[in-house]
Amino acid sequence: MSAANGASGAAVPPRPVALRPRLSVVVATYNRVDLIQRLLGQFARQTLPASDFEVVVVDDGSREPAAPHLEKLTLPFSLRVETQANAGAAAARHRGVIAARGEVVLITDDDMQVAEDFLAKHLARHPRGSRNVVIGSIRPDPAISNMPLFERWYAWLNNRIAASMSGPKRRAHGWQLFTGNVSFRREDYVAAGGFDKSLGQSEDIELGLRLEKAGCRFEFCTEAYVLHGSDHTSFEKWLKRANRYGVFDIRVAAKHPDVPQVSPWRYLFEMNPLARPLLAAVVMAPEATRPVTHVVMGWARLADKVGLQKAAFAGTSVSYVMEYLRGARTEAGSLSKAARHVARFAFTSGKPGQVLKLAKALKDDAVQVASSEYGQPGVKAVAAMVLTSDGYRVLALQRLREAARGLGIPLGNHALRVAQTAVLGVEIGKDVELGSGVYFVHSLGTVVGGDAKVGNRVRFYGNNTVGTAKDDGYPVIEDDVWVGAGARILGPITVGARSRIGANAVVLQDIPPDSVAVGIPARIIPRKDVDGE
Image (tube, rainbow, N blue to C red; front, side, top):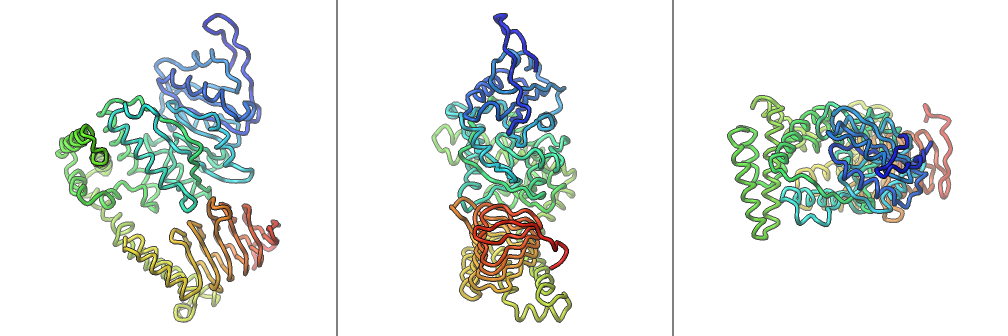
């Protein structure tokens, strides 16, 4: 951006240009000149050196262009303003990321406020060579008590989402990505294809799913927070936004049918049983039930006035989901099509689906473990393996644990975990994800803790530990990795696909795919026999 004269007529000194910044901040703005100037002022006070970052603002067709106002600002960092005709938030953010020059890109919104260490906190979570996606927290503005009920409910919802990702035994996922506060490698964004600009809402979640499927690791950082103070005051606009989310989440679910967390129909099974008849009525008669949504919200406002906050938020949740499902029902088309969507979800992700999923997992595990143990997956090999292999019994109990968790059977997961440990000598945490055909050659003494994620066809040769080093997270082990006897894999690291971990090695850093790790601490060398044993 070229220098310009300020309002007083004095020349604004040329703004510095960071040729190769470590971090690029991308902010899309629309009709919020005052708020974007406030945010840029806070970026000017960051503890991260100004030479280490740049800011790219994309004006998405504001009625009053932002560029003339921003050109008057004297800022210590490199600022570029891109201006486009109104095309939506996804298109604006995509343009900003493509224009960015930093290795790491951070996206936030124009109505946020940030602390002085905000950028430094994000950048610290992106060590060289990592493929992290870092989701920061969204905290309510101190003036939250003066906001409408639906905005206070949104702040409460953000707190719940943050709680679901916080702590050493929890991990963020792609469907939890939100563009109000997230950072990632620009290279990963481009490789994944960027935001789907056809989506008017939920483009952030959809991008998150593709990044996770591409192998990126998701982290939640409580300390890298923003303050959100909304200027939304219209209840009708809030309802319209809920409706749009329902419309576009149908499209996201169609692109990712393997991820039940993005299906709009999940609410019919997950919401409080007392609310489900209202939600079902919306799906059956979306227009006829529209007045009921307003009645429920009126009840929520009344509860709010008399100090019953929990009841007020519950009513607001029901109102939101009713309008959300109204949008989903509109996008689905006819009632018969919506019913087919609901039935498909029930039998693939609901309780009936848990039983089918269990049967399929047991079959797939049997075939793959038989291939590992006997070299071929014939009927006799599979039968022998099921009857004699402790490695398969570990997996079978693990699949039963997953089914118990999915079916909501009280203490089922815990009881089966105790049996798994006592009988087979392997301890697997209650939130661990095991891929298909994981082969415990010798199960005795093996511990896989917390919420570690183990890919398909991984081999453990016994007395292994997969856990946390400093209570700061658990490993991800990608497909076809072999873990030698006595090896330890510790901390929030990723072991790349097809790698080999030597006996008694202690792995404390990321291992690239097709590598060998040996020693204490492990040193990394490339595999020379990638196609061999």
